[in-house]
Image (cartoon, rainbow, N blue to C red):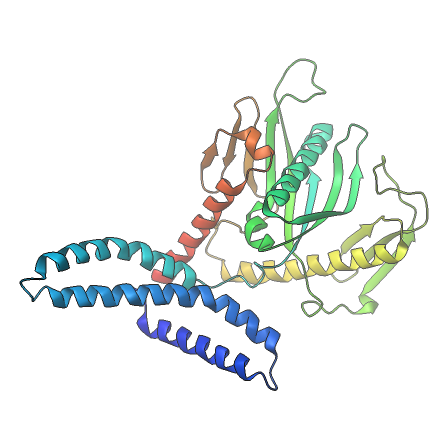
Length: 350
């Protein structure tokens, strides 16, 4: 049952925001517009729900009229059949929103166990997310990339910008495992390798304030096996945040740009650490929660011989690995989102 009192409070708040924006004097329009925009789809769901409830009430009154009884019974049958679905949609709309859902993200991919094969798989994951970004109309920019001689990736840090990027990608964090015959394997044996993915909501300046005394900034030459972003000048920047031990590097050609990139990534990692701390406190009793953010958790297996992708958190198996690796991720992301919403609904209704 949807709490009517809460629905009325939401409508009142929406109407108040509308009036304040129309008045427009001495207020922060941008802040009000954001809240107004967030509430609009909720209010639209509420309006549909209230219309349906009014229709049911009207049809029930019509039952008392012998001439209209048959029509009323047919109308009630239709409305009552549609009511559970509409109530579910409304409950989803009323779920607490993650304030970071609309933000761009910093995507980090690193090879895990498996040597050269793990580095090659890390490159495959990057291309998978690049293609998915294209299908969503997002932009993906590489901030830092270190490659291997075989074309794999030692580490990549990318910025993805667009609509609701974190909302769609936040369940991708964790260990991705691959089972396939590596190109370097002459005996045709299947190897198991892994890569880690971290999806961090991009921090804004108001989120994290960093004391300059907590930073150690070093300028150095780029090193490594090569790659399009590696250069031979002393422009690379390494920033160490002493209290947390976080180290960030950037190796673009411009030292000024490198400082800017490294500071943005550092702020994002610190912001993510704080979010993780808060989430851990809230979810102390939710060991199996989707999207727990545990970077050491094995979340997915990509089995190439069988053309199979399995997400272990929700026991979802898709036999369309080729399409998945081409960026067709909506089915698995939708399933993860629905599972997380079901968990939240169960907790609210418990």
